[in-house]
Length: 225
Image (cartoon, rainbow, N blue to C red; front, side, top):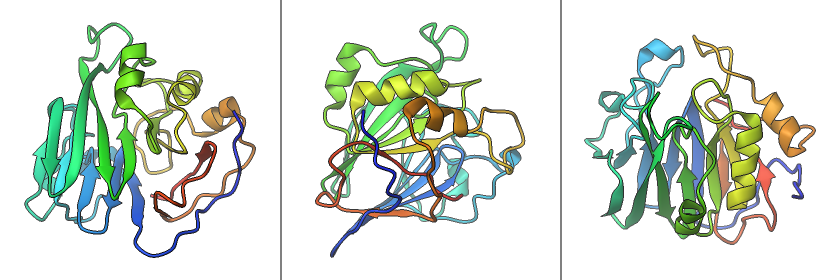
């Protein structure tokens, strides 16, 4: 897999903006609608602030992924597998597991496909296993993959790299890894970057993109929290 080390995407006109709020929490801001994924409680070490959203997705009910009371704007909360259309945004929740033992040690997890402004974003939540062929087929052509890489409670760096190879997304944004803010232990993002063959990626405040500006081959971006 060829990975370009360019750390920004050019865009013209309307665009989607993706900001990392820390851990597995992102703000995905389309032209009309804002989605926030997996908001965390104040106990994790990160500071959520007081973001607002139209929609909040929850991959599983652990406190570091399901702190919906931290989000303003009276958002619609999506916390189950299924198909939803909210304010013109198509969301598909796919049932997966938090571990490699079909949920026996850590329970279930929901992967979300979120289609905003013609860009298909996939948030893997706390995925604990590589995907089945059926799941890969069901996810289709993922444009942006929000990918846990820190191991311990999710897939680790080698498995995360395998999931990237399975889905072949245009953009990969790592999440759920060790940072100075996080109060408990995960692996750093460096192992994943090495695993996937990226030598250096400069972190940036946010990523702006359109369907037209997506790269031809997979690129990895690191975002500031």
